[in-house]
Length: 138
Image (cartoon, rainbow, N blue to C red; front, side, top):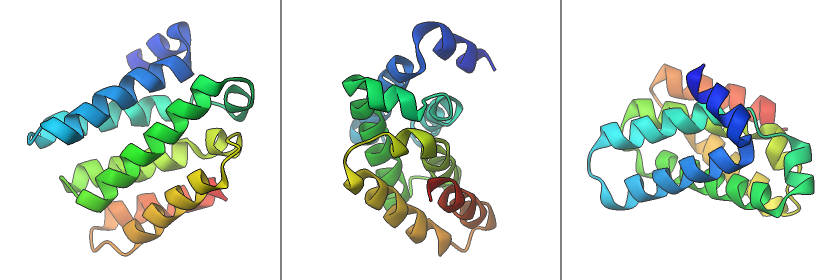
């Protein structure tokens, strides 16, 4: 709840950008899965706050949404930990409305590709998160 309160004050799209930058850095330079999981949790808590209207009205919101989708997809592809992958599916599901406001259909395609990949996971929580994300994305 605290993260959502901060994001509401700062602006969800701006907070999403800060969190996605931190995630990109954690994925590139950190071998510590706890950092990746922590950043993924922040993105999970914030993703649902970004609306379609945010992306329609703001180039920054579109850019941050696209960047967050790319980070979540990278987590699903690289599988740093089961918890991080599960959170990545929930991030993509949470961004469903925001993705609808992006002009580039490739963003939705990229997200759905990662979700479909996660659906095949043998870890039930990952597959379940991917199923929910797919419903929110379409």
